Amino acid sequence: MSTFEPWEYRPDAAPRQETDLVGCRVQATDGEVGIVVDVIHAPRHKALVIDTGDWVVGQRILLPVGVVAGIDQARRMIAVDRSVAEIKAAPPYEPALGEAPQRLNELADYYCGLYGGDDQHYPSPEGPAEFADPGVVGSDDALGNDLDAGRRPGSQSLD
Image 1 (tube, rainbow, N blue to C red):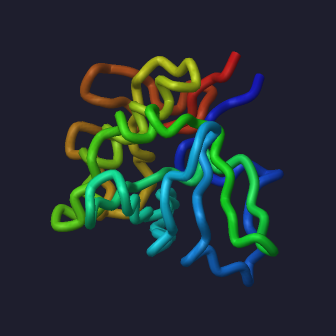
Image 2 (image 1 turned 180 degrees about the vertical axis):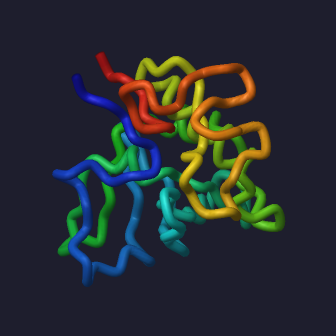
């Protein structure tokens, strides 16, 4: 069974350690998304901050690295396996709010849903305090879901 992990690179699409992704163009399945202006390397939450340029001047989006299908360092291009319309429809990124847990969960839920997930994303209970969800107690969330039941939190089945 394969899973979609929104905050982790796919094994065949992970950049080399020395690769600098800032300045790379991001290409969706049907057009260009924009340019990488920052890379977030928070524990358990890796994402690309993209300046979309023409969509709305000054607008930036947060793109979980799990959507990266490949990186062509020579061409300075990152390919993602989502369409421009799907990326535009994602929850907005508001830099002033930072990477708040609720915002990250909304974004993960959205992308997990595109991969056939169940739209339920919970931060890891063992994650750092800045990403802790106050609704999570131990290994069960506030709804009584067992977070340790056979899958990593935030992963969704692609089957």
